[in-house]
Length: 503
Image (cartoon, rainbow, N blue to C red):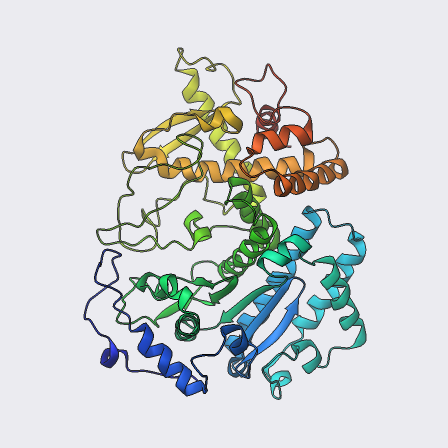
């Protein structure tokens, strides 16, 4: 049962949309709401949040490496059950891709059959099957009467997807994710988590968190199966819209990204987030859903506000200080994205179809034409090296030139500020296509390339902290990751030739 509080009566401070600039503490009444939720659910404030999730209000389903929790009451609502069902199917498809890329030693054909067995069972769900389901630690597989072949497949998949021992000791064996169908349920849950674990309050009890679609309590992810309504108003924090409102695959993209974040952080937990990890996240969404039109900032759960203010942001683009630094301020605008619906970057217009190969080919051809006019450029005659950027702000084009990867890419001069948004989208597409090319073609035939790519993942995971990506790549592939031009054999210029040919 949901507790529906009259927010206007418990808000401590008036105000409109959250603007990220307030210095006098949060507007939202986190403590009051948390105590109300605890009282309603009969939870002692000394309780443990993990114990609450093991209680009667949330059902449990193990899906490979994921331990998924979902409100029991919502399983009887057809729309909410449909979201839960699609979430589980997406997590299955996500893991099918990841554990194949990662080079798990289990036979691929056997794993594929087991995934299909689980998928078939989940596709058969209906509200009628959930009438007697209870919360707690009892698995939904058993409560729903899964037969022996399903349970056996589940056991094999659990072994196949097990978190490595070193990671399990540091960050937990399972990827615990709490799925809340509505904005209200999401806010109630993370607010309660902050009450039960005061160490989490610093980031959970922030107005900005109310406007997010996911957050964390330790290594437990809490995700909302609704998007926020725009423009966001802190007075009306429970107004939500479907993730698939603008695109039929929007919800699946969101769930695939949320799952990918957990899988990849468990893999690379010893290191800070790197563009290789982010690219794997981009590509896993593409592998699971076939499209990825998510904004890059969503990876870090950033919300870029509008109406005259902007939030800090990060960009993994070649140039500047690879260890960090300051980028030009974004121009603030109304809504969740900059620009308008008509201002879609070339490198986003097809949602990553074919791992962005087609849009990169277009950009490469246009970039070559622009570069050929610059006779002073040392690579002006090199047709594979250049890519066009376009600025809607000034309605002009420019070009950027390889190398974009390795140590040479790290020291590149950034393009003018008005082209940075397109540069960010370009590099997202470029690195996505590069690593997919590396996975399928980087070592010759597909089978050898896939095995070598699994070695790259393992080597990047095991590398000494601070070791650059290009050093790891050269050790695995035997040639430099990049070079100043194609006269030296290297991975990046091989890839640029692949983009030109399209195969």
